Image (cartoon, rainbow, N blue to C red):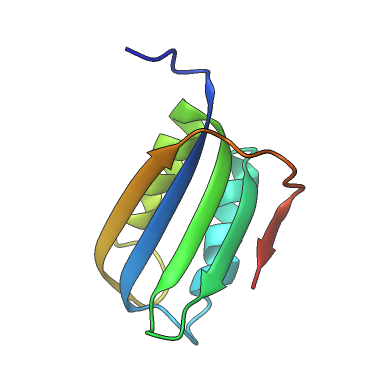
Amino acid sequence: MADATEVTRLTAWVHGAVQGVGFRWWTRSRALELGLAGSATNLSDGRVQVVAEGPRTNCERLLTVLRSGGSPGRVDHVAERWSEPKGGLTGFVER
């Protein structure tokens, strides 16, 4: 099993009513609180793509809050993919 402090990359696709409701701003705030770098991007099909890099435990916490039901809008489903970090990310941006 991987070390919980290892740096990893989480890519999550958030399905539901998540555009035009402050969801990206909310996600950015949660990610910065966790010390993660990355982005939250509106996709043309109505989903939001979240990319976050940092300690695996903090990425897992972000994934948990994305699924918590406490976000703006309505989250129906969150798909996730874990991968090696690519680096080069500074801060957390909304796109």
